[in-house]
Length: 91
Image (cartoon, rainbow, N blue to C red; front, side):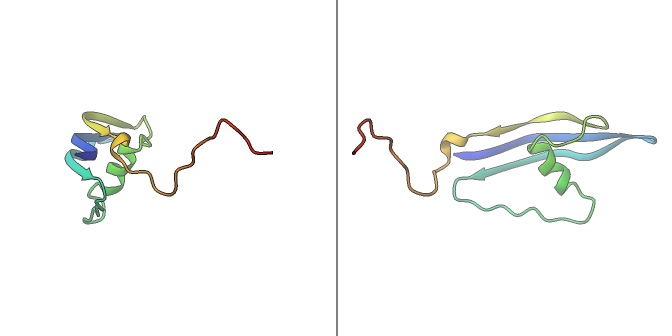
């Protein structure tokens, strides 16, 4: 099961010349214990995709036109030791 699912993500920006389609239909799934590397040419939408997932796209001029970002944190394993709180304290 995926920890992060991106389905049909589209992010556009309003410019003086019209709408720039920075991200146009990204689908991505990241499973537990999986590492993903996004590569591509300069200006292909890597950073805008990440900013959209993190809800950091400045609006305006940006606009999330379509798609879904689903985060399932309960499917993630906790790292490090777990601490339990005891109801009794030693004196």
